Image 1 (tube, helix red, strand yellow):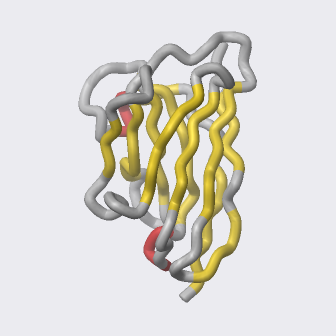
Image 2 (cartoon, one colour):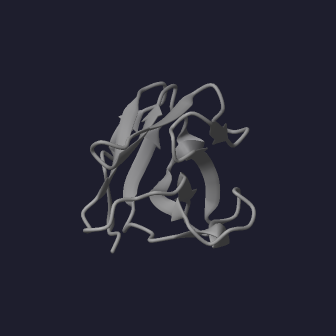
Length: 124
């Protein structure tokens, strides 16, 4: 089974950086593409980034492109999200999930094994 645990969130000033990590604490190795999503209060969960199973192909939302970088280390069964030039509008709970349900890679419905999330707060 797959159990995802996010970490690395916190409070940072605008322009700062954070690196989020997503660890699989389950006994089943992740063999699918992985994604990061975020959800701000009162808003729907939105796509942030996706990395292919091999780690070679990545996708980003327009709002984070050029500032965030997704990567994975399959040997450690870890996924990362490096976030630079953070803005107050990046404030949200960030979740990682596995692309296991098929469908649009930008839709949360295509993903499963959601972690509990990690809070990112960017102050102005």
